[in-house]
Image (cartoon, rainbow over all chains, first blue to last red; front, top):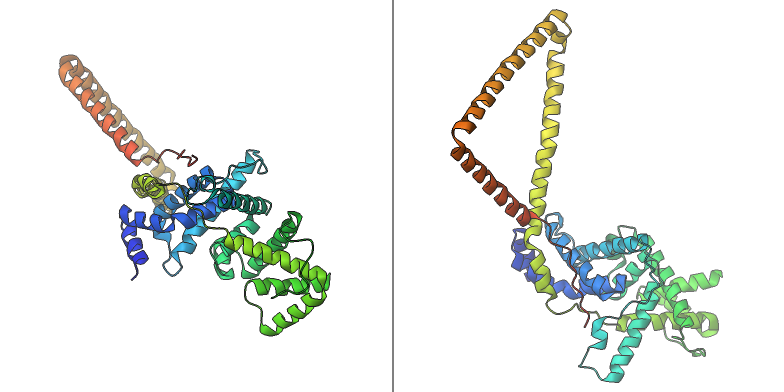
Length: 195
Length: 185
């Protein structure tokens, strides 16, 4: 039995400190997913906290046959999609400029140039993600930041593997077009490429 | 175009490292001769590299502690709510089932008018007895209040304590207030 299984077992019995260990271990992945989905630091933190609270209150329904991380990220991403739909329901525009993540303008370990480049890259990535439909964005984030397999993404999205492949296919095409439109690819393409 | 779609699918497979060697060679050969597909491939590669190099973001400091502080009552609350829900459910379903059982069991008897009349008469008599008892109790209570005001005052005080502790318990079981923490600045 590894540490995670021990913490889970203790948390199931109501040990909050054991669940605290799980929060420590997964705060980055959960927060990052919420941020990539919502594009806003404040909302992402609230969503991450809500995801942990939901996980804690629903621990009895967690099936240990599946990976805990997949289950937790599934709760997070589905909550984020609900939030995006609610946001649309109150007619807040998703296109309004969102504040960048605070870490991008307060990282003292990087020089000004590196900070600037990181901010630029972050703005580019979030801008491109924001243009994707919710389900496509969810699939892309789970694929790139969490290296999830098609099967795992299908489990999170409660859909089929072929639907996941289709979403990733369409999302990547859209991102590639967007990238070309933003000058991510040079106008002059190389004559030889490696596959 | 059809050929684009076919090679695009191969490009997706290549990005996910799931393309068989034979297809990989075919794709490479095609890209050497097709500038449009080469451009698409380079765009896909650029996106792939950009996204893979974009780091995982971390929440503000003390996130774990702040989240942990929100947990204590959550599971207790859910369990308490589940118990209340089950009790409410049972309080509706059990009498319903009992009534259905009684109706099914005694339906033949209820179809006899004489018996029904006797049952109604009995119920009316029971009601009269209950009304007499309640009336006597109320009259007795009225006299008691008039004769023993100090005892009545003590009882009201005790009821106040019960309500107060009930409120405290309710607060303990209440859902945590919505989080309004922002990690800017």
